[in-house]
Structures are given as structure tokens and as C-alpha cells.
Length: 81
Image (cartoon, rainbow, N blue to C red; front, side, top):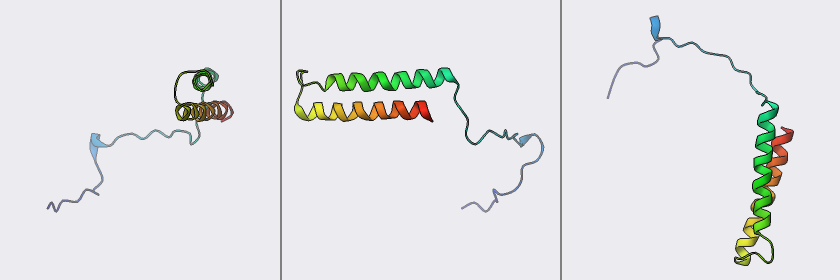
């Protein structure tokens, strides 16, 4: 086992500068539009794959429908927050 202490303060050029960032940064409008459109598009695609006449099992379609709704909710939350 090592007996050296790691709580010693650094001196000289070893100290790094700390940048204070805002606690709740806001995204730019373009980032919000692109993120909302991407999540909404994936949600609509997943809902489209869960149609009654689409190929696949009933359980798989229900999973896709649930994912589609989740992505659409995430899209709405992305736009508002």
C-alpha cells in the first residue's frame, strides 16, 4: 500500500484553470428544431411500422407503437424545455 497523500495542493504550472459554466445552458433555436424534428420523425416512423397491415407479429407492433409514442413525447419535451 502506498502511504503518500493525494490531498496535497498542486503548485506551479500543474494547476488547471476552472471555467464557470452556467447551471442551465439553453440550446440555440437550430439545435431545438433539429432535435425536435429528429425525435418526431423517428416517432412517426415507429408508429407507421405498427400499422395493422404492416408485416410482423402483434407483440412487435405493440412495442413499435409504444416506442413511437415515447419518441413523440420526447420530441414535445425537447421543444418545450
